[in-house]
View 1 (cartoon, rainbow, N blue to C red):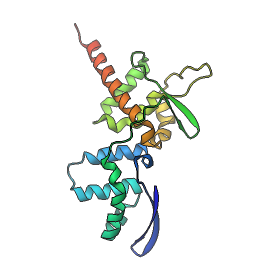
View 2: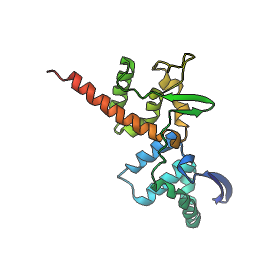
View 3: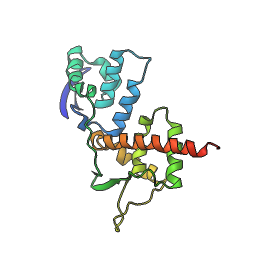
View 4: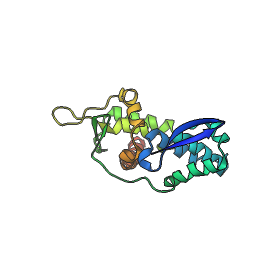
Length: 195
């Protein structure tokens, strides 16, 4: 992350500009995925929206930027054309709390199964619910060393914590979850089909 001083409409303002995927949070990554799927805007508009997502420079201010400042900022975003670093982790630490990955998709509770099915129905693209999937598959350990049981309150209690996690900390786990969810969804469909 670099700090960039810009003069916008006669005012000096300082913005944090990401330069690598480590600087991008889960919620920003979800916004980038949604932006990438937009078909009704041109490439320049996409870059302007990307700048707004990554830097929080208000869209009105982006429109007021001199072209050379716009290009200077845009050059910092070349990392979005690369893959997110794929670090598979058994646990991650966020705000001093350690969360462990639940990776056994053959041993889900009814609450987990219903939550997965409900989440998948509400999203056009599974990537849009990555933050919610983290609430489902990242758990604290109890004193006995076992993962805590899933509670639907995790979706409200922990979602902001996971939205603000760096995407590089959780990306590979999210892909792993997506593959597991696909397997689970197919198994559930097979189970529900009358024979």
